[in-house]
Amino acid sequence: MLGVLKTQKSGRFKSPGYYTIDIGEVPLTKGEKFSVVVEMTTKGYEYPIPLERRIKKFTLKKNCKGKIGESFVSHYGDYWFDLCSLIKNSNVCLKAFAK
Image 1 (cartoon, one colour):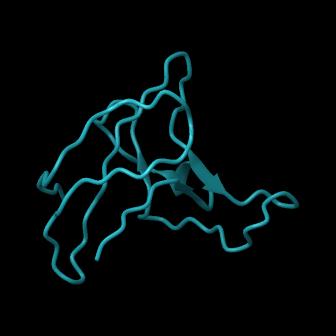
Image 2 (spheres, rainbow, N blue to C red; image 1 turned 30 degrees about the vertical axis):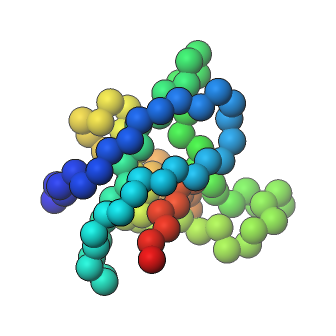
Image 3 (cartoon, rainbow, N blue to C red; image 1 turned 90 degrees about the horizontal axis):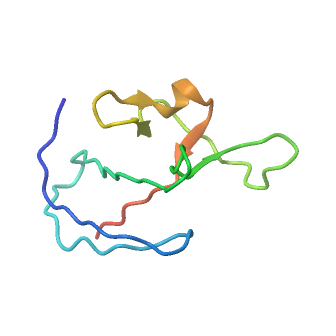
């Protein structure tokens, strides 16, 4: 099912890291499903999407568990893959905060 674009932002970051981007007010109803879609490119690197997954005997966060239907990735935005079907128990490192 395709959604409706409610807002859009663009920009660049000079260095890698975690950032908070204020997208303004987007009206949602309690329980409504929504998506946050991010297009990322990194010059000279094929895989710019940060992700998390549990690595046995390495990961400290024991509850790092991705689920089917949570994170999707695409090379060019035309066909989307569920990240868990490609990498078991993984999630894209992206959060959306709402009031």
